[in-house]
Image 1 (cartoon, rainbow, N blue to C red):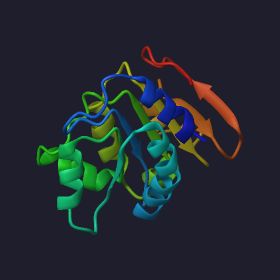
Image 2 (image 1 turned 45 degrees about the vertical axis):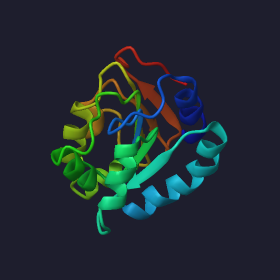
Image 3 (image 1 turned 90 degrees about the vertical axis):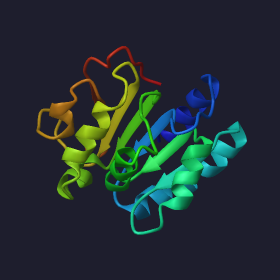
Image 4 (image 1 turned 180 degrees about the vertical axis):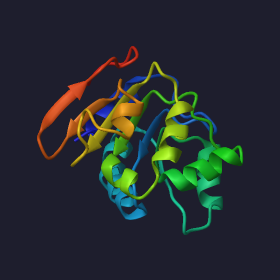
Length: 171
């Protein structure tokens, strides 16, 4: 539901591809979901002239590092590998304009929340940030409480809540 508007917004924004500095970030667990999202994104990105790359553990990081070094418009990542690449200096998140946390409830269940917090703290506050979850409560703990300015969508209840988006806007 977020891929098409995110890709169109990214395509309309300048500049495009910058080495080590993606302009859009999608965080999700596990790597199978990240791969499924990328599979859905690929034809949209190609049609708009955008590049995307998946980043997750369990595979060699060199192809991921090379792609990021060459410049990627949209980075799709699992939090663990992304934090590793940030720590090694391969990725900077200071140019991210759009951040999506998909399956945030599952990330919290898997223990990724501390890493997600560290990653989100590296993205500009002025960017658009969205959280998609099947079960998180808007007043609960975790990402919603830590980042109250997130655009939050509960898939289970079809409710949408937003706080201060930090200058961001809803597509």
